Figure (cartoon, rainbow, N blue to C red):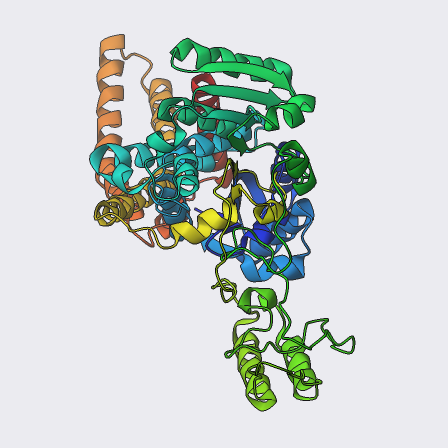
Length: 570
């Protein structure tokens, strides 16, 4: 087995990088096609969701495979390879199997235990089968991953630990209230009619919204989704074209957006215009927490101003104790050398003058020392990780939200600046990632991990045993040819044998050969199923001088049969 996976997810990369690297449907198709066209890979499949992009391939060379798959991911995502590489992870052979099985069980999801990933894995396999980029390895792998995921959900209580991203997002919108109480009687606008949007619409109907409006670029799909929702009888649903979103926004209480658009679907200006009574917060009225990817604007101490000579275009030190530099998130990903430049500038920056009330001014030496320490950390790990939000500013009263926005798209559909609008609450992928980091994990997770470990071992053993099967088949085929040749030679020497005598001799010779081959072939399959057993196939071919082309022909015949079966069942 030479299974290789190269990817990035919410666990390895900040949402801002995932958003830029997101692959639309056409890009996913081109990526798998280019992968199998590359030299090291013979099979390929891509698993792309709102919080992960992973490329699976069967490769014949590890290092060349990693280099090629990483390059292809960078090319098709549009993010430079140098920028993308620090966030990529690589799994090979059994570790790659373990990773996919864990993903299928929801252990690697943003919301642990959510089941939607199974549908996304199924879609990934179907796409690879349709494009003929999935051979025997990836077909077996993805189908087994689906079975493992279903087993985890049926045999454990992982469902108690997990939920869909939609449900989790609605819980965040509800601010601690019961979702059914919060949603009851509200009007919802769902933008998009794909799988995630359909799930969102169904979830909204289940929790008790009164009306759902579906907007989509393809009106037929929106109308079909509205028909399905109306069949439930508990909600009134209708479809509208995308150019009606602005009008519907004036009446909606809840908006859920998940489209494949590459640009923004809802700008902050459009939301403000649609909700005429919603006024944007002032510059000094930044919300007490950050709900999107951009860092808040710097708040300058009294009497200070941004110095244009700052090499990084950052504001002077703030008049509040503790290291900030616009908040740790503002320098996330910054190189050590850049931080050192800023440390040197801070040491010589003009100090703010205070008049009237006394302002707290940081010691420039302490500030420079703090930045230098952060630069040292960046030098070790390559970048400053975005682990914490900026230091919170003083909390100010906000209007009670009257419009709730849930953005489940990657890249984002809704302008992050919307969170600065009074009376509007925005929850997006980034805020969901922050919230899920503190979510408790159920005890059933340990049981699921044991299931994954057992299934990985069983899959590896089956794969290794299958690897030797063509060699065993070729050996038995060679033995059958030897028997046939000897029987033909016997007929020439003893032409007077009748059919009964000839049959008895033929059967006897075949039994002798079968008994001689039985124990070695059974034992070699057992040995091959163990870790490190791949070499037994080579030993068998060498000992019996088997023709490599005969073995390869058996493998091709088996792969062809497997492909036909998979296409028939998909």
